[in-house]
Image (tube, rainbow over all chains, first blue to last red; front, top):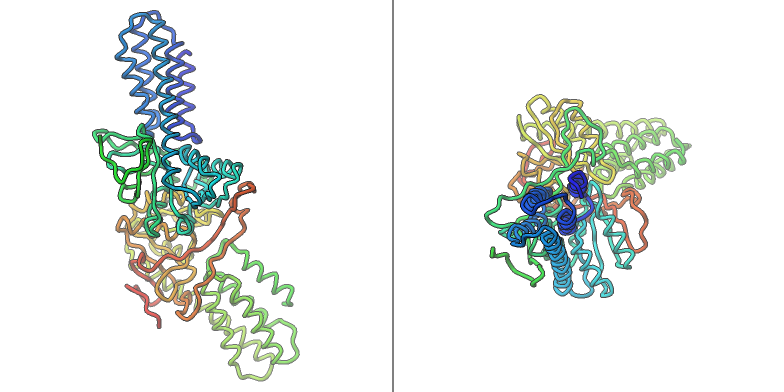
Length: 291
Length: 291
């Protein structure tokens, strides 16, 4: 992997509108593992400096997504602290460190889904918004228990289609709605379950825009609102609140009227007071306390 | 106008996704005016019976829209009470009654917009949802006062485009968003102004689906939520809550997945406790009291 190839892969991650934060964090680690093995270098010191520079670039490539920063930073720390002095061993250890973090992340997502499935229990009608791989795994675990799902299309790019298609393939009875219908349908749900792109230190949730509206509607009808995400998604209290990414206005598919500004913010913060329970790989929590 | 033509026009009104409740109510009256003049009849009694039957059909053709029922019922009452005995005069009087109600409805909408413009005042940033001809008239009155608008696309058929295009033509600085972004942007608004398809006796508002979410978000941020509609839109306390119309699921443009039910409910009820003020042709009200 040379720098041109690294930049191409970084752009793919930056422009990805399909995969969630955890999947993209693992993509970043896979890119770093490959870079560790392949970037041209003769000596260990410039090799390490280059890798840490590439890692810093990836860490901030999707500012709304804490797991990218957290997992890439964890990898950088292990590379920076590595004391071996021969380059081939250092390359191998750095790649192995990335693979371990990838495996750790996958396991954390599976454990989160298992906790969420246990909390929800069988025979429930569950509503979600947008696409979350953790929510999808939870549905997989509950698919034969009488689960019914209510899913949103999630404009502008309609990630909800991917979820509805998969649920249909698993024979889970599913209702598919526009975002505008969320208040009407949350009243029919036993619970709301959403994933997160990041979790702020006070328990507020960074997730696809529309999540705050769904949380307000769930609160209005007394429907529990659960957030399920692994601990890699936590933002530290001493870090600034992440930027909320805005994508191209052309995604809305409307003309360019002279006096009209078309906005396409992808993420928003749902405040902690609207969250009923936080689910992570360790269990179900009534609140989030900064470690 | 024969019955075939009447049925064609009735279907057009039933399937109309562009015009609001007041405009469609006036369309119904125009159809009845034409029918009064043109339906084949030799004697006044069968003529009147036929007209009243056609009016009953139109009265319920859009069950979410009170002004259609109210204006058509008002016309029917005047036709039923008419005491003239010659058919040509009866035809002329029935058509004139429809024209008077059309003029009354237009004036009421204009007066509502004037009241709303007075309440909002100059230089405001106002958010709305979907398309309302009353809100559009209010914008027209405020267009040179520094008004800025935030408008939603209003899936699935995106009536918000019509509003954004007109506001752009009037040089009103406008922000155009998906419904999912409503909570993010209502926080930036000075007020929300929506029209209504119907107003229930307790002040709850029947309007395009998504209105309840916007009202919840406005409430969360302490942004006043104003509803503006003429008195013809009031539903009486002794009438059942109207059906909320659902349109074809094909409007969402997604495949027909086997286990997925695609829902496309067009209207919802926003409860009165989320409304800050009700505006009608007579003024601005802190509550709705059934007359």
